[in-house]
Image 1 (tube, rainbow, N blue to C red):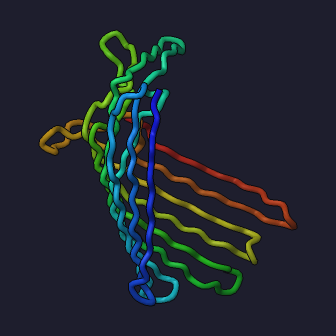
Image 2: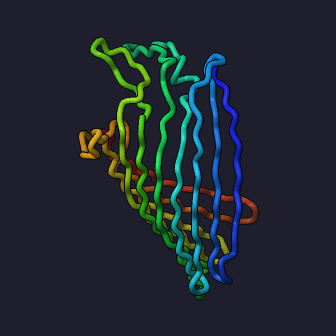
Image 3: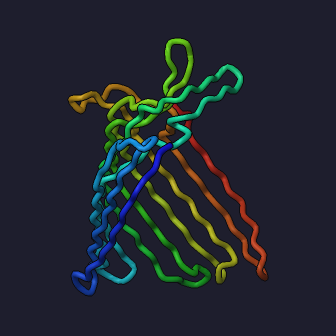
Amino acid sequence: RPDALPIYFLAQQQLSSTAILTLGGRLEQYTVDGNFSDKTISPQFAVNWRPIPGLALRANVGWGFRVPTIAEMFTRSQLSIFKVEPNPKLVSETSLAYETGTTWIMPGLGILDQLKLDAACFQNNYKNLIEPTPDTLGIIHFENITDARIRGVEVGITGSLLRQFIVLSSSYTYLDPVALDKTGAVRDTLAYRYRHHWVSTLVLNLRGWSTTLEYPYASRTA
């Protein structure tokens, strides 16, 4: 039985009339069946800068920590030919994440209420990544299989017309998920992840009622 003891803190400092610095952190210790397993401190830093009205630039870096879930450690099940066995020896995975991005909000003009553009680049580096892994008999265990890197870009646009009667949004995400060896060289593509993901949504609002039409697309996973 896993138990966790987390402690959080968050602080913000106004650097100027247009810039804000955010500092945060998480201290966590967890045990399994009453035995000490791991502990870590995960700090986070972020800066938000608004050089002109409607335009915001952001950057952040943060260390992450994920404790194995109860299902990953103790699940024993079978569905059709797929059999899952427990692995109570899992250790936590850690990560280091970077992101830079920008948001631009354009004021309304005519029938256009508002137009919002958002773009970001990100990279996440993982150690002891937890993944479902089949053995030579096809039995699946969750294991700390590898170090990994997932990087990509995300672009989105949202606009509303006729006093929010029509709301349109579309977002696209590209991922480059790879497994790394101990030297940091690319070893393979991570399984179960898409490279391209696109979602477009149309919402109609009328007298308290709303109708939504959504089209999602995801490329084939590895």
